[in-house]
Image (cartoon, rainbow, N blue to C red; front, side, top):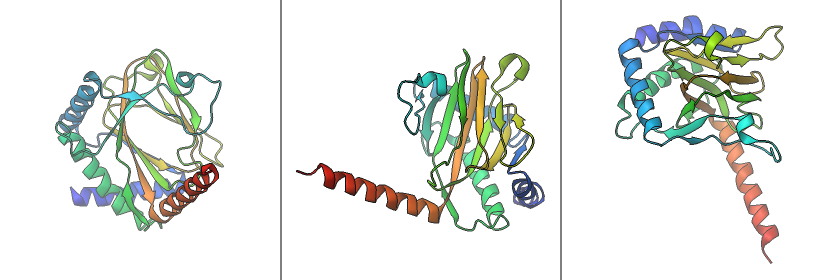
Length: 232
């Protein structure tokens, strides 16, 4: 498996990220393990552990659900009942770590928890946005899709990427056992088009440690400055 991952990383992922800024692969885990991950995600959903996703920045006066309609839970993979999710995360970790040196991103040494998400249908969507629009450290976005028998013509839910400087858009259907990777910054504005069926995914972000540390410093300085102004 390590040999297969290295071949995938160096032969396909790295060239695609460097050339067009994104890459996707089908049949990443295989049917059996993919179904185990899907079962665990459905259990999180059915047990009420998913809650409305939040919006960054100021969107006052605008319906939040109109902008972002997913429900999410943050998972480390160590929780009981998340063993298959943990296995998925370990494989993505190994794949990304095999890529970083060739991408010139040796400062990628950590990632977020996994964001388990569900768009419950009824036209729920996520409007066009950039994951890392303010240098928060996010460098690579990885999304694993879990939707069996997905028909984009009927169900919608396409992830549309608008690659910076390109004359095309990339439409990624959220089909079962598909893994998508793309740069998290302004090179890849993207949107989730309206979904008309339950749509599941797991997303993780890999951090540039230097940019992440600087973002944390900015936040600490801003918090300290705010506290000083509020002190009588």
